[in-house]
Length: 68
Image 1 (cartoon, rainbow, N blue to C red):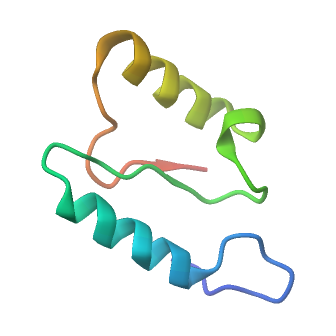
Image 2 (spheres, rainbow, N blue to C red):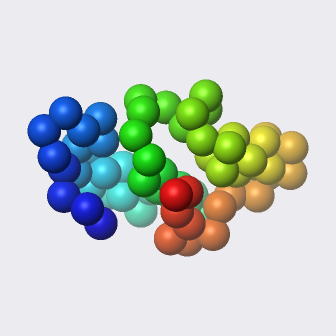
């Protein structure tokens, strides 16, 4: 994982918190998005596809899934 740079919108501290939360919820997964922007819902076709797949079929992304 890349280190946070000044001006980045995805601080590493928040990624660590998200990993901890996902690990504490049975059956959950964490989709990591490496591009910039506050939300993947509007900024990442990869994240949108994962969200739609979950909402339609209930299938979470594979463990370690990354949108680039």
